[in-house]
Image 1: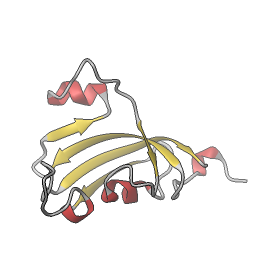
Image 2: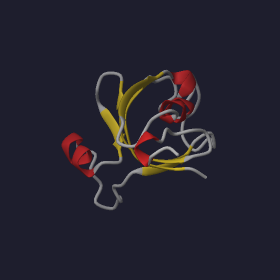
Image 3: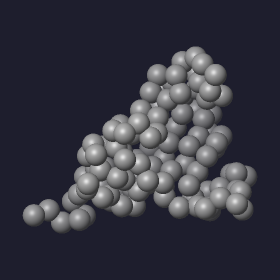
Image 4: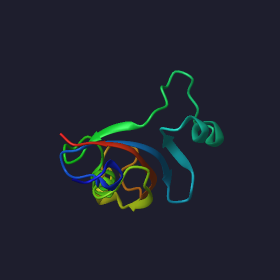
Length: 113
């Protein structure tokens, strides 16, 4: 029986994750952490700052974000660079289409379904 601390996120799990999303040049565009939001000028008092829930493999987030979470453990941190083809696409109407994105991730909890 594996202990909770050795649990690694797998497809189908619900992962709770804090993140900071930045453009390649370093400018932050989104975060789930209030302290980061205040530091980067993104703070919105109407927002509830807490880890987001992502069900792995369910298409709830961009592909590169989803793939980066697979294999992570609780309290693990990782920084990933996501190319447009695993983000919002090389072209298209989304304002982030064609952009390479950098995410700093920190898993706070994992729930096996």
